[in-house]
Length: 346
Ligand SMILES: *Cc1c(COP(=O)(O)O)cnc(C)c1O
Image 1 (spheres, rainbow, N blue to C red):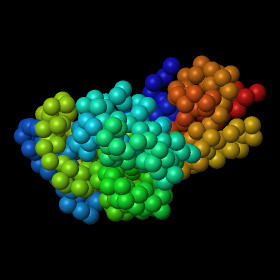
Image 2 (image 1 turned 90 degrees about the vertical axis):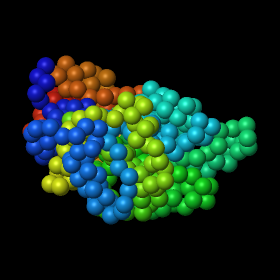
Image 3 (image 1 turned 45 degrees about the vertical axis):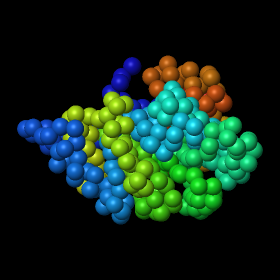
């Protein structure tokens, strides 16, 4: 198996993009103050304030599980609850970290087509169970943008959820593992689809956008960030050489690579989807709106592809596989994959 070839299993299979690497190398000249007291971290945080057109509190951590669980813990007490989609990463893929970090805040799972919470699904939870002292008090709605199924909340959908959150005095957390992809796909400003849509805290993923590692946690509601640095430190998420997370972020922001990378990933997925649609017997499972394509493949086809060295996830348990494009996806590899799928179908 040749691991130098690009794969479609996840956008975190990709390497480091040139812009992120270039800034990392620049930050590697000489020494710098530790624990985020360096110029790179300062500049990257300012870069986010500029990008989001608002004075916000910015923290850098190693990965998304930490970003989600620590930020949720900042919004919740142990006796609170978080409403999220049943497919949400915080529920399915974080090993209970949100509950652990918050000392027990309860995740409440809502259904919804195409990986999205709906007003009805949220209301069903708000109205359905007892809302008295005997049940965890609802506190947060957690949205993933783009969703785990590769779909998008539109501006209207975000506005409706914002209204509902206001009505019930709920905070909004956004898992932005693919926030950049949603900015591109929706063609809206980062501000419009975050704080202007009522998001209190955003976990903005750098890893899947082209960094080696690193997430930015952005508190638009600055009061919620009180003592957050201590929470990060206690959780082992305060990088002493923080400049190697923040400098690549600065590289993505200053050069515009964050958008370029996301656009490339989305366009690659669009091409991949179109090529798959030309194969009559295949079925695309969810609307392809950003950089993920979900397609139904039989076990026989999946096995044949794996035997040829293709790596992909089929964790949904519905007979489908997820094909994810990233900043380094090439048309040649997509064409090769399509060729191998066609061969396997014969
Ligand atoms: C990848 C991902 C994360 C972050 O995962 P880590 O492996 O902890 O970095 C968070 N949310 C979603 C939806 C993701 O796809």
